Image (cartoon, rainbow over the protein chains, first blue to last red):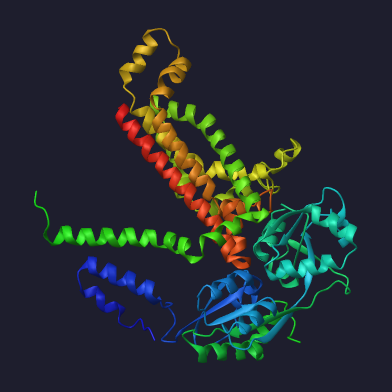
Length: 262
Length: 264
């Protein structure tokens, strides 16, 4: 395990050497300032988990947690390319299960559910219902097909009549790489509507408003997480997963608006 | 002057290390998959859409930059006036500004909720999430690469030559067009190549300001990002095209700079 305790010692050597040594230690395994000796735990998490895991994170003392956020598909691609975070927390079950089948992660566990909603900028009246999306001149942002929020959106659209689906598709102005891109375009008023998670609307603190989808259209949105094989801290990673499913994790997720796992 | 010695050896080693480090990712891309698969990756219509859009938007941005930037650079190079230094700093700012900041800034200025948003809307001009918005983002980030080079080129002109042109009765516009631009053409070409290369690689400002939609706003770098998760080989194919373009840009710049040095 890389420790940071030895770093101050390099200050006694000549400045040029010290700079190299500090840079090297930063590159080879930077430790967080307040880690207090706990090992770092790298959590690669879906962008939509930000409010629950980053903004108001659950207490976890076994490790110094560092969360890297991106679209779940980008994170999965990084793991396939050889990246080794300790934990992979995705906004669907498909990607962790695929990585499990490829032997890259241990068996995934479900830890939360979410709800897909139609979101509009607060104060905008252009779109009031799903049917309004098909009107001419309406602009829409969705997630790209690979990212979970995009594939959930595709599921919703696939359940509509072909003509309505085609009309809505024609109004799509951007396919964003993750849900934060959709929220950003909505909050800036760059589009009239977009498909995001219920938790994103809550985290956007009033800038966007949710329109609930009809139950028949609502896809099953289950978040699964897994310990990445070959990570530095498998024990702490397993503990983090247990925490997510335990009282502390569930309470943080519930505060952010997530639903309990199925 | 002494040759050899431990210092020269250390310099040589660090040079080799630097060159190897900078070359490694390119070798990685070129050796990751067989050339046949790389070519197959470009058969995908979405790859061609992205390359076509990149070519169109970067060319449009370059035209805007050259048309507006050349006279602007002429003024900055041939006049001394209060605030000139500040103006040059403003023009050079996008060189070091993070592209994400450029994208947010463009949204805050030209977006629907932005400074000029309602004025643009009244004029029927929509830039956000449009191809025109991509051109705006590329123009913003790439213009200093051209303008800097143009200022340097104009400043290197022999002042007596310009004075002679004016003495012979040529007005300022004629001096600029018939003497200034032709004599600095190599420096201008080098700047144009660099600006085009920067525009071709733009990612962050484009994504934030113009979004990502196939055929409309999804340029080659945005397509690479999307394909990273869906088709790694496809992402590599597009990367190879951009590497070739980058090499061409640098070759053009070197040739043009050498010719410019020969002119001087």
